Length: 369
Image (cartoon, rainbow, N blue to C red; front, side):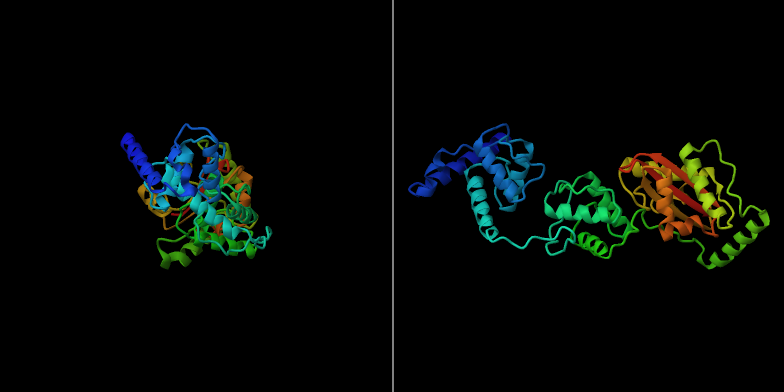
């Protein structure tokens, strides 16, 4: 297949050189040698520079070596300009590349007013930024995400940490989780950056009740049961030996918060803990961060699947290097804090799994039985 395409490319190249005979500007085209993988010389460097300037630069290195990424970007160029997609720079591709490059250079001569690095604006938010994208817009995006509390370094290259931060942002803002900053996502990030919204760490929680008309009575019943127990100011509950050290620490932190406000401590439900562990491990293994599992659906569908009965339920999720850091994130977010200090729920299942871009992944599941 590849041999046939090479042959066709050579024929096309030759026919072009014949039609150009007598035109001084193309007199050297007859001796043009197609550029392909493995070649290393100045002509490759020229092509790489033009590709880079025209933003066909996915993992492209301008180093005179025609490698697989050079071929990939050549194919992208050929596709855009309706040329045969071979990944080889024949005379037709070279001439088109030169033509487009020269045309692109003309409007760049007048120096446009430099953008302010402190407050990126949103004038050219048309191109979708994705894994491998590079440039000033990527750097601006990374600066805005970092200001909003996401763990990103402004390198100008859209790497895995940027993709994850964008997915995190999309999850919190109820957008489709793509990990790509299209015009809508970029604009929303810019708006939040301008408004200096600091509280954007864990994802927004979801705490629906399966029995909305019983919510008030559930809360009242819970309060009366707890007040009769005499445990409202005591954060100590039996911690099953099956819990890891991190899980025990987080249970204790949660119950300390409750005790300081006169609330009864959450009891640990081991079955619920196992479900939370499955969810946390799946987020690590499949590289997503969302209340909706691609396997089990919503947290409530997941509980149903694992045979967990409940009247009301909720879930908090976070990723952070430490237990205390994740706990602080939850407590700094009104929605997550509400689940931790709720009078509705009386059982908790907490999972802490090593993994994810921030070191550890946390899932808290709350139940009213």
